[in-house]
Amino acid sequence: MLFYLEQSPPAADAFIDEVEAALSEIAESPERYPIHEFDVRVKVLGTFPYSIFYRATREDCSIYQPSIQTRRALA
Figure 1 (tube, rainbow, N blue to C red):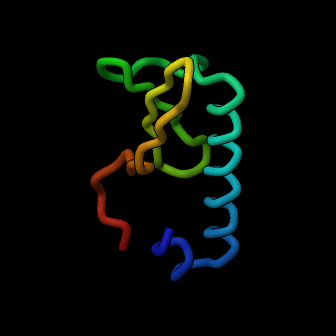
Figure 2: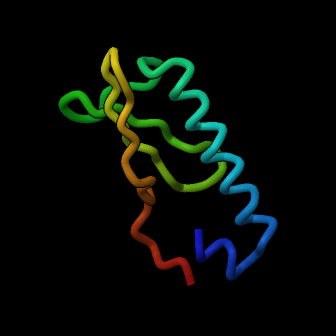
């Protein structure tokens, strides 16, 4: 997010909004997104090149750090 904040505060706000919306979707329906590996699921963000990896059980949901989808230079 620091990259977006340095480049454009509105982009940083949009990134935060999209991550929060994705987390809400995951919380509402954890089995909605496909299994990536083992029992870890993935939600790909729509606007930004990030994915959220998570593991859901009946008792809780563990969210892992959002991961960038590309290796190209951001500068």
